[in-house]
Length: 117
Length: 111
Image (cartoon, rainbow over all chains, first blue to last red; front, side):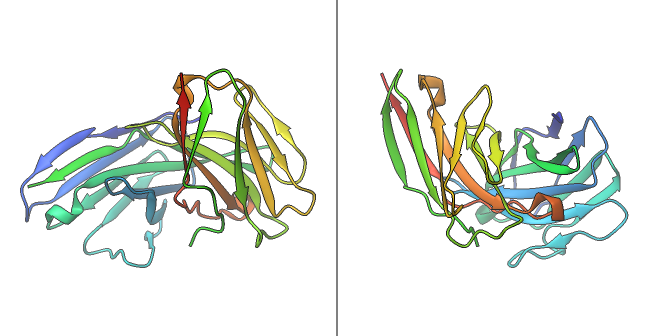
């Protein structure tokens, strides 16, 4: 299994500012995923980040608001830009796990709990 | 959109088997059935997955119907620590498919 570290684990930010969340994996992975989980809700996929190419965003999410970097096979960042209280959520990083030629599923970090005031 | 439907919530007595159903009537031939759970304030945790055959690991058993349109996750001896939201997901991980979460089932284990 992959070990995923996210930083920061939580933060309280002023509206209008930006926060960059880091995701570090202990092994090389092709695909990394960023999710948002609003209070009391399920997880919503924001984007898929492949190393060496631009991230692919899901409907309702745009690069200007959630820019993503993927500089190598073990690291990615998600920035939440120009924050408003509606951005208060848990943001989670995920990586796929593969074995014997087929996917084993995904592993998740513990998340970053963001509160915008 | 999620391709699965699950009951919103379920209760189960501690020590009993918890059986969590999932409908995935539009599942395609290459899609696996995955189960994850999310304990409060933690990231989702992989439990088990399967394609056609029933599967068992140290955490749970997965029973998939012959037509693959539904499945059941079984926690054989539920404990209070199994209280969580359980997500059933279908995905073609061989194709680098995304994992799309539905609303899941909130399982309460009762002492």
